[in-house]
Image (cartoon, rainbow, N blue to C red; front, side, top):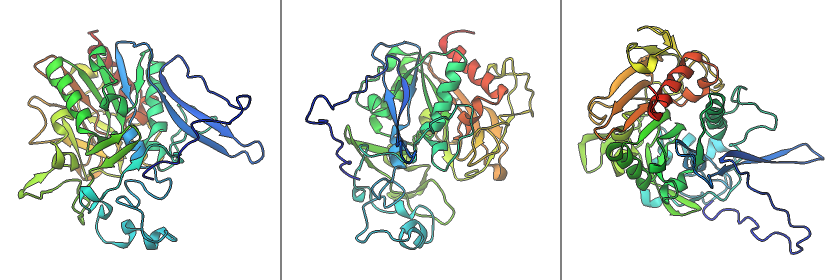
Length: 402
């Protein structure tokens, strides 16, 4: 889990038996499928292909750090044996893993940041699979796919259906400076971009706040925790969170308990609401519902026919947490850290006032941020017409059309 599985990078000794896969010319998300003729078993993994020649309008960022965080191949993820492998192998997860044996939420994150050993990208991803004959309009099945590449694939399918060209990058490209933000008008992040390095965060915040960049955050519980790139292949997660009985995603400041920190990112850097305009809270988790229109005169609702009080984001492809476009994990405007002038456009109708808050703000440099604040938002794009029109309105305005 720390070093990866050491893929064979040489191939066969005989050149006659060595096979190569030529990268497609078009940037995008690809899956390599390998199928056994005997059993029919399928092995699959995602392949993020960055552009060789830029299309300077829209860049889409894959949430590859999140894919790693949830990958427990080899016995560890950021959720299973997060800080290190146990001294004895796990025989019965319900009896052996700390997430099940110790009362309270997020006990696996109760260790000091320095105790979390690295996790390697160089491993198979059994939970991050698009099935062999799956279509973007099919429901998203499974516990993990609805928050990872199969869900993000629905965004790419929607962009292509609506005629928007894009370039595709993974998060290491942003961290290591290989994504030139100034070459694009829009950066889109989606579904569940939970784990960012401070270099990623600072680059995008500077681009939006000081250089007129336009950010579309079409996900939920994003930028919630800082990660450290040890190299191209390994991350260390700065994931310490004081365990609680109520499942809170924030914690008191260890150095000043009177101050409440909204997230793990707020503990190590600052609240992500400073950039996204919203931050995830525990209310609404594991529920889903439509949004309710609150600001129907705003330009984002142009052509939708929606009036204040009308619902949208009703239909969804999300099977695990079905019910609407506001769901799974939901973000809200922060009273202390959302930028001045952040506008509340709509709110999810989830129980316990847990709905996502659809938010928008502009910066003095000409930058802007549109935030969905919901993991299930993208799962509704292809099947819910008002939500599709709202998202089209934002892209069109950010590209310069009015």
